[in-house]
Length: 346
Image (cartoon, rainbow, N blue to C red; front, side):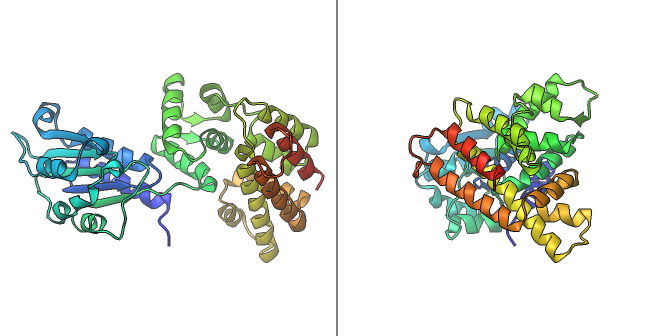
């Protein structure tokens, strides 16, 4: 089974707890397409590995574009000066031409050195010795992207760890704003919390709207909702607003529309297979909060399986047009309006 974000989250939380207690491994390989967790671990190690008074003589930070394996190994082989350990960090390690040459050192790393190899949004070849050796002697954090349909759940978990709760529609709105960029969500959340009362523990969609800068009334989230209920005038009005944004491209709409109607199709498949399915099973199959099930009941009634499949075909067709395929002179906004109209008339 593929490793999901919950596994990565749990692993990184354990690493951060360990380094806070002064428990370190000799080598950390931080990698993966999603940089949030590798960056979180790297920051924690740099914060807790040394006291402020120890950093001048015992912390070395390299950047992949400006160093090579010989310099990194030479630094890693030094002994700490009036400290329990020394820290050597290689940031942007994916840009270091000789990075695979670190494999020999990682096979038998110095116990008084903490070596951090941070591949930002990238990974080394898992078939090579560097990756294999670090798995034996140190820790590998392999951070895969969180999928679109998992984002609301990730956001809910993220807020929960901060002692906060977030309303389902607020999580969906924040997910729409940030996509699958976890760092963006973390940054915007920190900004928002600074503007909210200290005793506030429940985050609403209004909080997201007021502090993050996204209009709840004219969002993709709201568009999919109006399409679910076949509210033609509202859906077309929202589509016109979204399409009028200066940097709008149709892909920003077709991807979430596809995900939405694919969920509707999955919901219908579940109900055909198990008409008596309970709330928990429905929410699990869809990957959504039970809060949204009423909408999916209406969507399934408005778009039976055959219609739903036709809509998905339409979305794929317009996704192709939005990328320049047989679109003629139509603008990105016009394509979105045409797509929404055809969905409503399906």
